[in-house]
Image 1 (cartoon, one colour):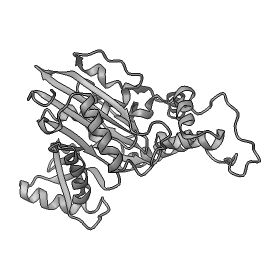
Image 2 (cartoon, helix red, strand yellow; image 1 turned 90 degrees about the vertical axis):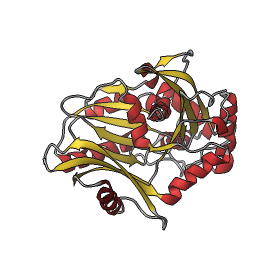
Image 3 (cartoon, one colour; image 1 turned 135 degrees about the vertical axis):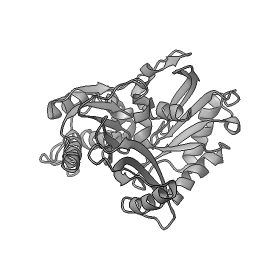
Image 4 (cartoon, one colour; image 1 turned 120 degrees about the vertical axis):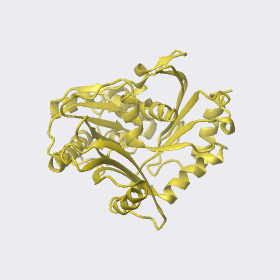
Length: 356
């Protein structure tokens, strides 16, 4: 069974809509896919819970997936999972070089400026990213912070099925890790990464020499589904099917215009709101860093395949769109048959992180 072999690494992406697991092994300099699975948590007549799945839903589902994949949880040796949301902060800062103890103290004070506290202790980690090209006396530091309560809640969920928590990463970095296995960043300018999940979209900006930036956008796949429900009088499962097959302009009749619950003609579409959120974030990045050369967009996540999204984005921003398939970065021992491989980027990035 999986978990007995020490070379296997497991990446677990417990999303708000589905659970994704990737099992990977390192073979020389390459990574090889051993097994993978993506399972939706809302099937049949169940409706998506925007607050995320309750433990009573997530734990049995996770246990079932582990059994289906022939994984014995308590025998898993290397696993990486991730946390996200408004209680997680990631920010690149510039700092003078300090001892490890001095760095930990100063970064804790810095972290408290960026995350809302819930009354529990703040947990901080950091990674040095090299010299600051604008100030030779300083270094670039990637600062990550969350609250202890948030961190321990995630650990408790894993322990419910007898998994010993391993590396716990954050969402913005996990999918980026999978991209950077073999893909090269441009020498000049920055890449805009959009990880489109059910509840939100994670926008990250990254380049070789420029400041890392990440922000959660409050629009994800569920908001697109809600628009179809409201405009076309569909139930949740019907709207999900229409969204995946036809996108946001399906060939079906809209609600009557005199329906009191219909959308106002003046209200922006979800596509337009999505574009505005991205535009606002990129303007902020330019203002903060002075870097305005965005080379292209990289789309990942379950919502990356939404019909018409890439065309809308290309027309609005006049930049190339790359649908990133993380399976293409790996060797594989098994056939890969997935109609939406883009949603596996985080799980694969986590599995690779588990190699460290």
